[in-house]
Length: 348
Image (cartoon, rainbow, N blue to C red; front, side, top):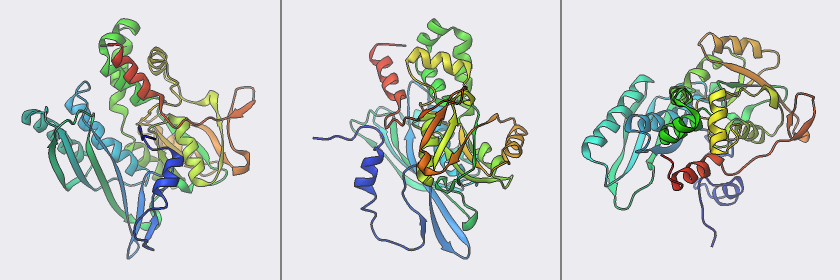
């Protein structure tokens, strides 16, 4: 018997989900698609409704405030790919019975404050406790926004020749969450300075400011949030969604020292592991310096790493000597195995 484990594969998505989408409505401009962060509905009068859904985090080892931050900002990061800020949110909470009412009050208070800070109104949902619920997933949420329908960006609209910009660095959230989840081990093996620097990365896991600053230049054609699969996984997904190939300069990828040390400790490749906080941005040819300057003006690091090419050229990684190799794509993010391996081995 085949069992689903983790995020559904691209093949499973195409075979199981896409042929079964309920009633067909002509005003759904962008529905479910591999590598696409949001859906867009034309609601008339030139207005579009964009929406996205994601799991809600509740990770005791990470903390209630940190879990609330991830619950809000991972959805907001998806919404940011439209080039607009999210406006509304619905939350469905399936809480473990072990969560006390005082702890839930702390968690929800942080949800409230994080939503308020980015202009999101909480408009409804459902809340209950579930017997036997021991997952770090506490339910799911949906964020929505309205904007001029023709101005809403989606990650499937990258164009041949567009330059690829990545903000910040690889593996921001992987490094932060692994360090915060196994503090004693990281301090003992890598030192307290690297531990604290990894923890500081957690506050960079929102990519909403990145997206808004880039969109304001008028030179962005598409954006894709970096989550499972890391920076290179996100680039690959964006190329596939847009019907394009890609050439990425492997030597240009922004590799942070503390992420490198942390991912080496956990035995994972930082180019391919969860990287929330970074945004992949497709920029019109020769406009990359304009967009990079706009991001830098908001103290956001940005790096041009390659370009989108004709689909027939495939997805390639280029080394410093201009040699190319096929860019691999991994259905499963190595972060998860690393986390549970460390947990099962008793890392503290």
